[in-house]
Image 1: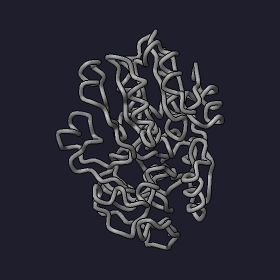
Image 2 (image 1 turned 90 degrees about the horizontal axis):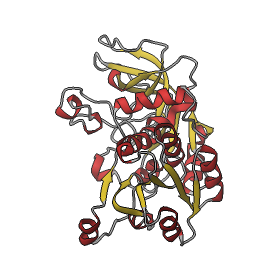
Image 3 (image 1 turned 135 degrees about the vertical axis):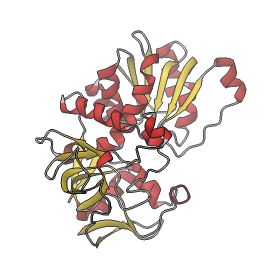
Length: 340
């Protein structure tokens, strides 16, 4: 089968023929990929930024946002059958450790992360686990929802955590209306009555944000912190930072009011905050990584009811490098999806 393989760091991946995966254990599932999202994390992987954390062995197949159809199942699989349409939680988990038992399965002590530490879904077939499969309406097209497996669940997870602070009358600032941010706007609009302010440097992204439910938009032209503070009378109750690099991380904290919460979702920058500023204002800094299986299942209910939609561009698998270059150049609105 064809697969998008990373052979060396700091070099674009190549399309290669590799053997199809095979069932190894009773709970294994092989999925015929119908859509694989192209994510900024893939660019970080190519640069080697995940090498130490994930201990990757090169070469391997990229792709951690995956949806498709069940192709083959292990002998103990009962929740899905051959032919079912599925979206895959990005981290197959054990179900037995304390984190899994507590419903925090994205912190599973024994999970894998296809596309980061093992072969991912930018290929014709992917080996995963029954525990990763969320069964979908058979009319769902995998290419239309694939990016919800990571971009979607990550945005939803952050919004879900912020809900107790976003009662009517509050304000939430969302930094970055791109691949994750445009999903976050829709989740906020569907789940809360908060006032939504979106900050982005791209006018087209801000137009999309308005269409998706933003009440105010702010151009990131250097004066965005002052503008947000004026709009919020001193700062937002919650700031969701989908950028968190190139200075956005420190601006996001500055946009957060006393006793508010700054959620770090994007990454790449360094947050520099005097400890006095934290204790004197009781502002919270909250990290976010992916989300739980239940987060993904809940998000798919919203998606299948039309309350969260992905704005996507599709590419054939052979055009993976072109899609990655588009993303790196900042030309992507929404998400690019590879379709084998």
